[in-house]
Image (cartoon, rainbow, N blue to C red; front, side):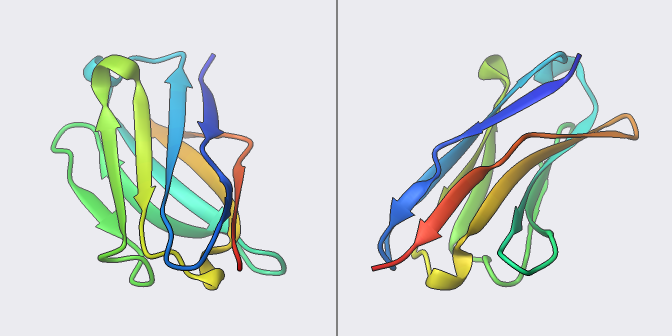
Length: 118
């Protein structure tokens, strides 16, 4: 059974940094064909894609609102994907969710809250 567990959220001041982690179980990064993504959902707003990374090429893509500030990466031996978030803004406040598209089936984590405030 595929499970995703996010961690690393918290309260940070504007301009600060956080690193989110998503630990995956139930499949092996190295031998799987997948796309792993970070989404976020702010209060009263729809869930939106923040960043994604593919398994085979390792190519990445980002929402325009986070380009140049956020970096998605993976650690295959640890079956973990990270989201490094720098220069955080109040508008980055949201619950951040990890998602994997594994051979056409999508799985979600429960999310971790990021609050950017003075």
